[in-house]
Structure formats: C-alpha cells, structure tokens
Amino acid sequence: MKRSLWFLALSPVLALLFSPSVATADDGATILSQGTVCKQAGHYIGWPTITRTRDGELLVVFSGDRDAHICPWGKTQIVRSHDDGKTWSEPETINNSPLDDRDAGIIQTKSGALLVSWFTSTAFMYPEKLKWQNLPPELLTSWQRHIEKISPETIVADHGNWTRRSVNDGKTWEKPVKTIGSAPHGPIQLQDGRLLYVGLSTHEKVLKLGVEESRDDGRSWQYLAEIPVAEEDQRDPDWRVRMQDEPHVVELPDGKLVAMIRAEPKDHSQTYLRQTESTDGGKTWTTTHKTPIYGYPPHLLMLKNGWLLVVYGVRREPFGEHACISKDGGKTWDVEHEITLRTAPNSDLGYPSSVQLADGSIYTVYYQIDQTGEKTSLLSTHWRLKE
Image (cartoon, rainbow, N blue to C red; front, side, top):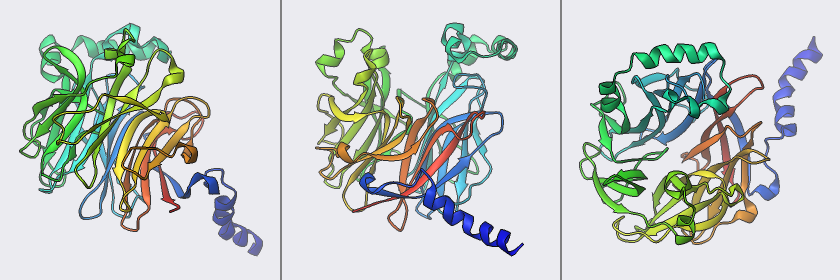
C-alpha cells in the first residue's frame, strides 16, 4: 500500500521527465505544461483565438458543436479561465445562425468591450465540397433536412463576415455588424485607438487582401486599403482563391505594422508564410514577400522583451504546432531555432494563437486530435522562451 501511494505521488514527476512534449535545449523554449481547453464528446471543434483581458482573465472563442470540418452546425462559442489556463469553464454560445459559424477571433478593446469576429459558410450545402470528409450517408441525410429549411432570404441575411461587441463581459452581445473581409484571429487595436482588420475581402466585387478600420470601437467598419500581392504569386491562376488568405497583423512599438499571410500555391512544397509591412497606419503596404517559415495560418504577438512571435500549424509530417521568433521586428526570422509546441497525429490541426501571461510565459491554444478515435479538441501549450 505504501509503495502504491509513493508511486502515485511520484508519477506526475516521472511523466514530466519522460514526456516527449518536453522541449529539448535546442528548441529555445521550455514546455511548462500541455493541457485541454475544451473537448466536446462526439463533436468536432476548431479554429480558436485567445485573448487576455486587462483583469487577467483568459478568453478563448472557437467554432463548436460540429459534426465535421465542414458541416451545418458550427456555433461561435467561448470558454473562460481565471487561473492562467489551468482550468476552463463550460462553453457559452455567442452565435448560432442557420449557417456554419466558423473561425472566431476575439480582442478586448481599450474601452473594455469584447469584440468577436467570425464568418458564416454555406459550403455544407454543396456535395462536391464534402467528398473528402467521407461522411456516413445517414449524417448527410440529416444535413439535407436542415438545408431544405434554409430559405434564400436567410442565406442573404446571414451569409458573410461579422463582428459583434459586448460591453458587459459577454453577458449580452450587440447586434452583429457586417465586415468586408475575414481572418481567423480577427482585428487588432492600434496605439491610436483605431481597430484594424486585415483579411481576405471582397471589395467592389473583387477578391483581394483588404484592410478595414473602425474608429468607433467596432460599431462600424470602413475599407482602407488593398495589400499588393507579389507578381510571382499572381502567376498562379488560382491565387485569388487559394493563394493568400487568413492573415494576421501586429503593431510594433514604433507604429510599424507587420502582417503575415497564409499561402497555399499548387506546389505545396512552397507553403511558406508571406509577409507585408505598413509604416503609415495601414494606408499603404509593401508587396507580399515569402518568408522562410513553412506552415499556416499565422498569429502574431509582440512580446514584452521586444521580440516578435509567430505561431502556426504545420500540415506535413511531422505534423504539429510551431513557433518562430524575430528579434528585429520581422526583418528576419530565426527558423534555425523553430520551436515545436506540440506534435499531432494528422494534418487536421493548427490555427494557434498566443497570449503572454503576467510572469512572461506564453500560453498558446490550437485545435487538433487529442486521443486516437476522437474528433478534434482545443488543446494548449504553456511555455517559456529561453532568452
């Protein structure tokens, strides 16, 4: 009996010492813990974004209660942590339209308001977009019953890109506001108070990398600029559809803006993040250029020590969640010391985002399969850079 108690007491220490998730010295980081943010039994969930409020609460929004990667049931949901990610609340639903609510982002603005972004999809209505999922016929039959109830008027009203505010910590939410563009992790707030949203946009009936701004704390949005795409990428005949999207932007202390963008050319060996910069508050941007970072999509974070962090998923073997550091504001990236935050069993993963905690450590959330036989969950890595 005493031996059993001794082993149980020691087993967490042994697990930490021998766990493959503990970072090696050449990673440039120490993994403090791996965790589960949200798991919904029998359901597929994904595409999370995390923010840390001025009161120290962690909030994660995501698309939950799903059957699959593409399905009709996606809802915008939120979970909360008051202990730096050690424990999490049960999900609360923010949006549940008749369409598929996907890819939620969240920030807290300087006013204290919470701003959530997402987009709605009708992809589940088109069989040709579902074949790769190999779904059982009875599931598709239940979807078809739902599809038959969706009127053309509903599609017109609910389809698009959206933001939504709460001024009471998410107890209630204001009416959704339509945006031109969308990106998985949503807008940011600049030092001058404006909200800036870099996304894949349809402006004047043309699909482009667009920039929007809000000068009223997210109550309305105005189109600001288009980001020029490198000529070499425009040679891909499908570049406007599949080449560059899902961007995220960060503001450096000197006011310079750095945006990174998912790129997925036909040659998947060239799936490197693209980057663009602005020095005039987002009015003009440099032409997108290829970085040495393989993976997508990006989430950028300015760290307290002045380094720039990007996290992203890698959907080639070995699959996993990764991070890279720039010590010169995005001019160069230290890919030789790329950090593996967590490995994954397959390519259905990613969309990581990060916050820096009060003690300087970093908390990153993402989605992937946790245990064999399960659908995807929201998982986390709590880690610290070796400076």
